[in-house]
Image (tube, rainbow, N blue to C red; front, side):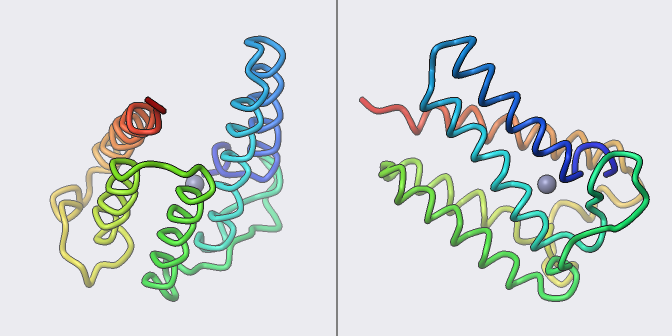
Length: 152
Ligand SMILES: [Zn+2]
């Protein structure tokens, strides 16, 4: 993932999102939240990914990542799950948002370890299908978060 998961890409994306949302749309708090969200994704990736995060697109080394997905997938699950709960607490989200965090993390369990059976069994040898499923999952999750995070 040389482009989407480099330290530089995350920094530029976080800064751009923050500045565009804050200055372009006048939503300062939202801009900072999106920027922090992008940076927190990088930090979680640095902990969980296995030596595949470069500093900048095109730079062959160093490749960063502690590799918890491979070495200790359940520890990666606990860290990501705990981070989701932490964000929910900071945001003071409702029960629907908490349910989405719990269900979403549990639904990802089979992706973290081959020992846990899941739908990815049907995607073996079909990398474009995997990417498409992950993309759809991201979009659906973002929409659900947007709906469930609304304050009534
Ligand atoms: Zn990532």
